[in-house]
Length: 256
Image (cartoon, rainbow, N blue to C red; front, top):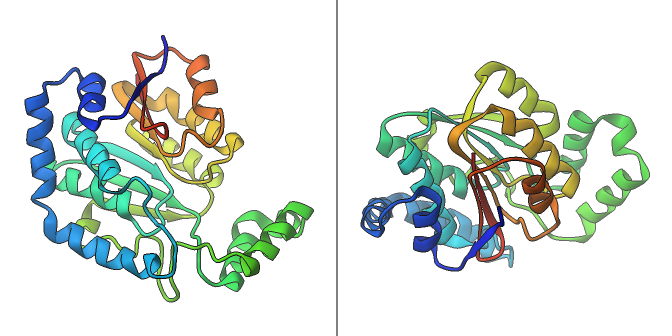
């Protein structure tokens, strides 16, 4: 089965869920009721935007898709890799709150502003050998040359998530390759998985392959930035699925 491509979010969601346009529009209107939360989140994100850093490339459209998936599927367990400021996490949590059901488990390898905090992070989670390897030292050099971060000074992963939503949230700090297996061993099944962490082909395939056997039937994998490499396409070629689709060339979904 071929991967289908969409540029319209309504058509994307209609196809994914075999749903009517009216139902999609009703759910999206519920999303708009959370204007107070969205204003809070965007006010937080503006701190980064003022420094020329774009923390959320797909903007509200991605949030609407994530929220709609949560409302349609009413998941018990959502697992997410990659939190940063917490825009996608917030959209997930708003859906769980409106469902009055489910929880989000997030993993993040925090992208701090401070280069020294990044080095300390690497030593803690990658170890001395990997951190001081040639690739590791190149990363360290980049920490002080390139202004690229999602967590301002004094903040933590998910710093833009409204406090009221955090009662549905459990957070783990570290690399997905170290933490995801432990999460899976405790949950045994996952209803929705969302990849938005390290977008290397190796890591994306690791996460997809690890999580797929634990995705229950008629539930989904979501992935941002599927255009960066061939991981999404490779993985779709390895598995049997009901539907695979991509929104605006970069946001992917696979229905099991």
